[in-house]
Length: 229
Image (tube, rainbow, N blue to C red; front, side, top):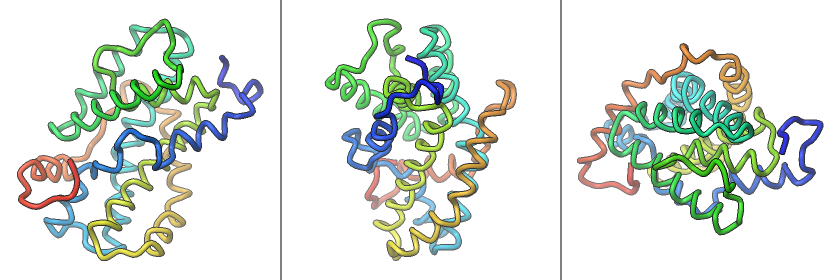
């Protein structure tokens, strides 16, 4: 199945909306990616600091890690390249800097394997790599639904941003309107991130998020918490 715009399944948009919906039963709502610890530490405490945090993670994390890897695994699924799927799956998990971040990647990946199996969307060959991560399985779902590469990257970034703001609305005195203001201001940044990620060569990939890694590591022993990371 080609993912080029001219050969797109007419239901591809509905498939993308399904894939990025908070109602997708994979448990993404349970993870904060270190953000809850940033609240506890006082690094993020209002609308302005929250926007700065998510903008930084987008620029130095997703743009140089998750998004370009997602593009590569979508091409690997389309080309039946099992070796590339295994390589990028292992590479991405090696770049998850804490136990919680790695556990999130693996647990969401396993949940997507189960869901796609129940929807009869798992291919006969190549199958998922051993211990498949979330990004690899998101790429499979996007490819199977006929979603274009850039739309898949934008949808992935959008789902990540919505999840981060949902975390903030639960754990901070932050209203839904404030969250929508952040979304409105960051919409162009999501598009720029997709464009930048699409141009990066392999040797320029890799996150640079020491603050997030520290927050995630500290979260593992945080006394009181709502989220698993």
